[in-house]
Length: 132
Image 1 (cartoon, rainbow, N blue to C red):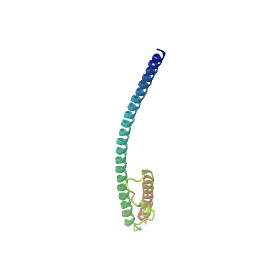
Image 2: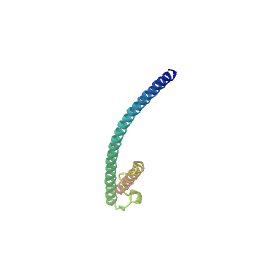
Image 3: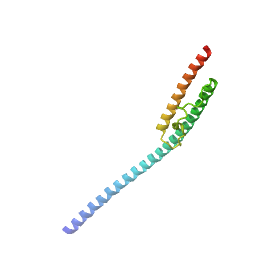
Image 4: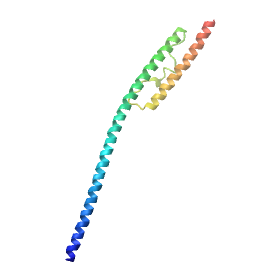
């Protein structure tokens, strides 16, 4: 009878262990479902961000091209060379849309700053031209 009692106790303990293991498994499955849902949400947000960033980069490129054209027009009207070394540097090459936005943004900011400086120079030339 002692062996039977011990076996029953062992079986009860094994059943308790199985129940705990199943509860842990269920908790892990629920955590996995939550993480998958978070991943799906994150992937959607990243896709949206990538799309918006691509649109912003395209808009910045367009703005840069327009500003460069305006600077060239102003320089030509004042009889200045239309090709400025700052604006025609190799850095002005178009970057692919999947390029890291930070260096591109820096380059666009650099060119916009350079264009603004050129516009200041042009306005100074224009004022000097008007006074002569």
